[in-house]
Length: 454
Image (cartoon, rainbow, N blue to C red):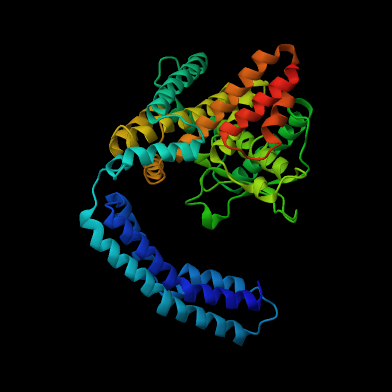
C-alpha cells in the first residue's frame, strides 16, 4: 500500500453516497414493479446495517482496516498516518454513515409491504424468471420439474449407497442423518481442538493433495499444470462466516500460488472422514487443477481463462469427487467414502429444495425440514443454506447438474469408443477449452468422439 492508495481509498469513501443513491433508485424501480425481497431478508439487512453504523467510527472495519494497512507504509511519518486516519474517519462519519442511514430508512419503509412467501414464484412473471435462473446457472434447458425429479432420484440413489456402507460398519438400521451425526462426534475421527489438532489437519490436507497430484499426473491426465498449490488456514477474522474449505486461484502473473484454505475455527466441525473429499474438490484434481490448466493454455483469450461458468467449474469439482472413488482412492477408507457420499447427497438435496422453494411453493420451513431430515445437518447451518437458495434462485442447482452432465458425457464416450476410450484424453477435452456452458462442452465432446471413431 502506498500514499496514492490512501488517496484512492478516500476517493472511494467520498463516492459511496452516489453509489448508494443509485442503489436506492434501482430498489425503488423494483418496488414499483412489485418486486420486493422476502421479509427475513429485509429484517436481516436492517440488523446488519444498524450494527455497521452503530459502532464508534474508529472501530468500524473501514477505519480499523485502513489503520492497520497504513501502519505498514514505511515512507509515511506518524503525523502523516494520523492525518490520513483522521480524513478517513471524517469521511465515514460525514459520507458513509449518512448513506447507510438513507438505506436503513428505505428498508424500514418497505418492511410492512414484504411477505413471508420466499420463492420467486410470487413475483410478476416469477415462473418464467425462475426458468431463466435455472438456464443461466446450469447452462442447460432443464425445466424446474425435471430438476426437481432429478434431485429426488439422486437423493434416493445416494442414500442407498450410504445405507450399504453404514450397515457394513456398525450402523445397521440407524437413520442416515442420525448415523452421520454420530460419526461427526465420534472421537476416533476428531482432531484435538487446539493448535496441534489444527497443525495435524493442515498436514493431512497437504499430504492428500500432494499424493493426488502424483496420482493425477500418472493416472488421470495427459497434461499436468505447473502452478503450485499451498494449504493454509482460513485467516481467523474470516472463520466465522467462511465455508469449510475454499480455493483461491493463483495470481495471473504467477506471483502467488493457488491456495487451498481450510476453516479450522472448531476442530469438532472437521471430522477426519470429511477431509479427503474437500482436498480433491477444492485442490487436486478439482478446482486447482482445472483453473491452473485453463490459465496455462496457449492461444486462449484471457477472458476465456477466467470466465466463471458455475455449472462447469463446480460440476468438474464434484465429478472429481466421484473420480477419486472410481479410480480406487477410497478403497480402504469406507468412512472417507461416506464423507464423499454425504457431500454428494447435500448437492442432490439442493436440487430438491431450490426447485421446491421457487417452483413448487415450498415454505422456508418445509425446505429446512427436508434438508435436515436428509442430511442430518444442524438447524443453524441448514437455515443459512436455505436462505442462500432463496436469494440466489437456481445457483445451487448448478453443482449437481454440472457433475451429472460430465458423467453423462463420459458414459457416452465410453460406450461409443469402447476400447479406444482413454480417460486421460476425455479429461483433456473437458479441460483444455477453459470453462464452458455445458451445452457447448457437449458439442466439444461429440466432436472429439466422432474424430476418435474415424
